[in-house]
Length: 132
Image (cartoon, rainbow, N blue to C red):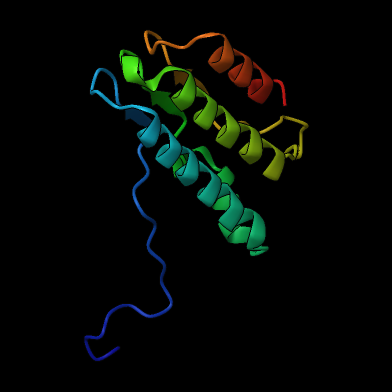
Protein backbone atom coordinates (compact mmCIF):
# COMPACT_ATOMS: atom_id res chain seq x y z
CA UNK A 1 0.00 0.00 0.00
CA UNK A 2 1.47 3.32 -1.00
CA UNK A 3 -1.33 5.49 0.33
CA UNK A 4 -2.61 6.36 -3.14
CA UNK A 5 0.42 8.46 -4.01
CA UNK A 6 1.36 6.58 -7.19
CA UNK A 7 3.54 3.62 -7.90
CA UNK A 8 6.96 3.95 -6.35
CA UNK A 9 9.85 2.12 -7.89
CA UNK A 10 8.30 1.81 -11.34
CA UNK A 11 9.36 3.64 -14.45
CA UNK A 12 7.24 4.76 -17.34
CA UNK A 13 8.45 4.75 -20.89
CA UNK A 14 7.31 7.45 -23.27
CA UNK A 15 5.66 6.32 -26.49
CA UNK A 16 8.08 6.55 -29.40
CA UNK A 17 6.60 6.05 -32.87
CA UNK A 18 8.49 3.67 -35.15
CA UNK A 19 7.58 5.84 -38.14
CA UNK A 20 7.64 9.63 -38.07
CA UNK A 21 5.80 10.78 -41.18
CA UNK A 22 6.01 14.47 -42.02
CA UNK A 23 5.39 14.16 -45.74
CA UNK A 24 3.93 17.06 -47.74
CA UNK A 25 3.25 19.22 -44.70
CA UNK A 26 5.17 22.39 -45.57
CA UNK A 27 8.10 22.01 -43.18
CA UNK A 28 11.45 23.63 -43.82
CA UNK A 29 14.97 23.96 -42.44
CA UNK A 30 13.87 25.18 -38.99
CA UNK A 31 11.90 21.96 -38.34
CA UNK A 32 14.82 19.90 -39.65
CA UNK A 33 17.10 21.62 -37.14
CA UNK A 34 14.63 20.81 -34.35
CA UNK A 35 14.41 17.17 -35.41
CA UNK A 36 18.20 17.09 -35.53
CA UNK A 37 18.39 18.50 -32.01
CA UNK A 38 15.96 15.82 -30.84
CA UNK A 39 18.11 13.10 -32.36
CA UNK A 40 21.23 14.52 -30.75
CA UNK A 41 19.59 15.06 -27.37
CA UNK A 42 18.43 11.46 -27.29
CA UNK A 43 21.84 10.10 -28.22
CA UNK A 44 23.80 12.45 -25.98
CA UNK A 45 21.63 11.81 -22.92
CA UNK A 46 22.09 8.07 -23.34
CA UNK A 47 25.80 8.41 -24.05
CA UNK A 48 26.34 10.57 -20.96
CA UNK A 49 24.21 8.32 -18.73
CA UNK A 50 26.27 5.22 -18.03
CA UNK A 51 23.24 3.42 -16.58
CA UNK A 52 23.10 0.30 -18.74
CA UNK A 53 19.32 0.08 -18.65
CA UNK A 54 18.82 3.52 -20.16
CA UNK A 55 21.44 3.01 -22.86
CA UNK A 56 20.06 -0.42 -23.71
CA UNK A 57 16.53 0.95 -24.00
CA UNK A 58 17.62 3.50 -26.61
CA UNK A 59 19.48 0.87 -28.60
CA UNK A 60 16.43 -1.38 -28.64
CA UNK A 61 14.44 -0.70 -31.78
CA UNK A 62 11.14 -0.42 -29.88
CA UNK A 63 12.42 2.62 -27.97
CA UNK A 64 13.45 4.81 -30.88
CA UNK A 65 12.03 5.88 -34.22
CA UNK A 66 13.46 3.91 -37.12
CA UNK A 67 11.82 5.58 -40.12
CA UNK A 68 11.74 9.32 -40.85
CA UNK A 69 9.64 10.30 -43.86
CA UNK A 70 9.85 13.93 -44.91
CA UNK A 71 9.30 13.71 -48.68
CA UNK A 72 7.44 16.39 -50.60
CA UNK A 73 8.59 19.33 -48.51
CA UNK A 74 10.25 21.64 -51.07
CA UNK A 75 11.28 24.17 -48.44
CA UNK A 76 13.67 21.72 -46.74
CA UNK A 77 16.26 22.23 -49.47
CA UNK A 78 19.97 22.11 -48.80
CA UNK A 79 19.73 23.96 -45.47
CA UNK A 80 17.36 21.44 -43.91
CA UNK A 81 19.20 18.46 -45.36
CA UNK A 82 22.54 19.75 -44.07
CA UNK A 83 21.03 20.25 -40.59
CA UNK A 84 19.66 16.70 -40.50
CA UNK A 85 22.89 15.27 -41.90
CA UNK A 86 24.96 17.03 -39.24
CA UNK A 87 22.78 15.62 -36.47
CA UNK A 88 22.89 12.11 -37.94
CA UNK A 89 26.65 12.26 -38.29
CA UNK A 90 27.14 13.46 -34.72
CA UNK A 91 24.72 10.86 -33.36
CA UNK A 92 26.56 8.10 -35.21
CA UNK A 93 29.90 9.20 -33.82
CA UNK A 94 28.42 9.62 -30.31
CA UNK A 95 26.95 6.11 -30.36
CA UNK A 96 29.60 4.40 -32.48
CA UNK A 97 29.52 0.85 -31.15
CA UNK A 98 28.85 -2.67 -32.29
CA UNK A 99 26.60 -5.13 -30.54
CA UNK A 100 27.71 -8.53 -29.27
CA UNK A 101 27.59 -10.10 -32.71
CA UNK A 102 29.28 -7.25 -34.57
CA UNK A 103 26.25 -5.49 -36.05
CA UNK A 104 26.71 -1.73 -36.15
CA UNK A 105 23.69 0.10 -34.74
CA UNK A 106 22.11 2.72 -36.99
CA UNK A 107 20.44 5.99 -36.13
CA UNK A 108 17.65 5.46 -38.68
CA UNK A 109 16.71 2.47 -40.80
CA UNK A 110 15.04 4.66 -43.42
CA UNK A 111 15.17 8.35 -44.30
CA UNK A 112 12.96 9.74 -47.08
CA UNK A 113 13.88 13.19 -48.35
CA UNK A 114 12.46 12.73 -51.85
CA UNK A 115 11.13 15.85 -53.57
CA UNK A 116 12.66 18.10 -50.91
CA UNK A 117 14.58 20.37 -53.28
CA UNK A 118 17.91 18.93 -52.16
CA UNK A 119 20.88 20.13 -54.18
CA UNK A 120 24.54 19.21 -54.33
CA UNK A 121 25.40 20.64 -50.89
CA UNK A 122 22.61 18.68 -49.17
CA UNK A 123 23.44 15.47 -51.01
CA UNK A 124 27.13 15.79 -50.13
CA UNK A 125 26.36 16.43 -46.44
CA UNK A 126 24.03 13.43 -46.34
CA UNK A 127 26.61 11.21 -48.08
CA UNK A 128 29.26 12.25 -45.54
CA UNK A 129 26.92 11.54 -42.64
CA UNK A 130 25.99 8.10 -43.97
CA UNK A 131 29.60 7.15 -44.57
CA UNK A 132 30.54 7.85 -40.92
